[in-house]
Image (cartoon, rainbow over all chains, first blue to last red; front, side):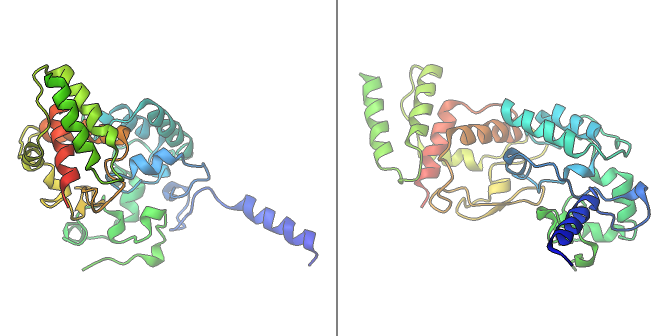
Length: 166
Length: 135
């Protein structure tokens, strides 16, 4: 193969890469929006990752993230307010990076913005997990992605590397 | 006269801080404390220590700074949302208490979480005085 052919092929492969990984191959309905090519501002990891792991923006639809950003004063029992510049950068990033997520917005109530774990996608992905597993001390709750997905904080949710702790 | 004495004692305090800590922090809180209370008579590490472990039920559940940062600030902590926290004491984590903006952010959030109010400059200065002294 000529050098230029290799370059063309690589370019084609890069272009064909899906924005979303599809780890259960059941069609668009449950496509896993782990990955985004939108570059995250430094504030996203620093701020959204300071009390919990920075959950991937593609896991909720844009309207759900808007609700989060509009209610940071009461964020699941914590004050998660940001300064104006960081707030704007993170708000813009979340909207852009989640734009392909067309799931319905999970229901929420004051102080509890829409949860990733309440999306149809999440529940479908985890429908084989018995309720008792979520309650294990080693897991804590469904919000603790890293308990089973050890690369979660780095955006790696590969099903083959899942290890459910005892 | 009182103000100059306070300034002098704060200056002494600043000189004895570890090199990593931001000396502007305590003078910042001292200026604010003087504005809040003209009778301000200096910060107390002992009061700062009490603030760290004081239990509050203001939020509806009993908590304190130690709920996440543990009773010993030299130890790593953990949030209810499963995030490991580097030890709070700058003697163990030298980047702690170096950035006024960051310190203010966490007082803003955490005083609200634990006490459902803002902390005063007196409380912040007391706390910073104590945490900088933890070896």
